Image 1: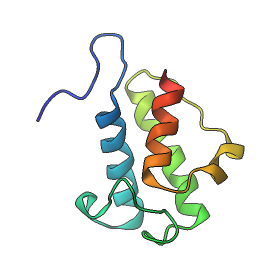
Image 2: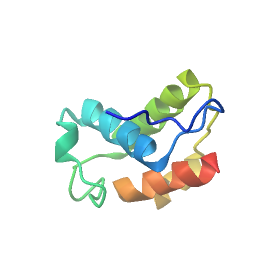
Image 3: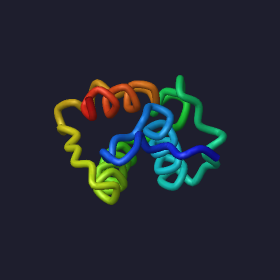
Image 4: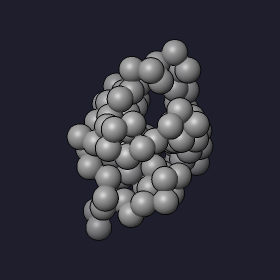
Length: 96
């Protein structure tokens, strides 16, 4: 498996972010990461409720923090995150 970080600066690429989102969501929902597609809707496809999304946000922030990357996902932005792709795109955009 290739290194998913972008180098010494602590940045992480889109594939790395997708891996984090998929792995943490799989833990929260008790699924296999391979069962989670990028186009899956949190609510419709994965049966994730708002509590699961809050857990996901906390897990992403914690995981990135362990990589010395500070990210805060605003509560107001949660309602706009409908799919796995939305979450990945949001994190990637915030990491800039």
